[in-house]
Image (cartoon, rainbow, N blue to C red):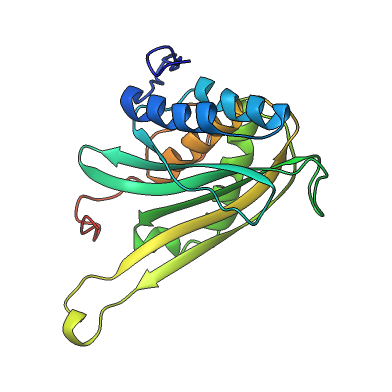
Length: 222
């Protein structure tokens, strides 16, 4: 399959970032090696519905976590401003591993800038975790053995950096076992999760959201 032949989903409010998406999927799909189930799982990534605010890129996959792996990186943008970044790793071990439910495991990470008053909310962790599980359910992405952490990070400047504004970040690290080889719904759910963390409105009605970030919320474009 050539880059021009690779399908990019453009359903509803979703659209693929064609040049980046096709490049990533060509690298993973055409160059990946491994058993047929892993090949089919990696191939299914190209059919995911990705929100237009998300840009994907190819990143190296870790080599020691499983015999076969693939990885995607993503950033959420509003104009030229990066609001959130993350990565999604696909692990495959035909024998499975302790704590897995089956031969596959997905590992997700995201980081997003947030207002200090939001990161201090004690309900932030449960809300963010619900974003992940509800996004997976809304995309019919069956999963098991989900686990993860939600971390709030505060950065303060001292000495030569004492005049820099205080910045606060949210980090989510999560993993779960997909119960099918078709991973497209899992990638779409990850896309939705990143957009919610970035303060974008949800696709699904009734999803809890955080207040929109102010324009002077301390983001310095890093």
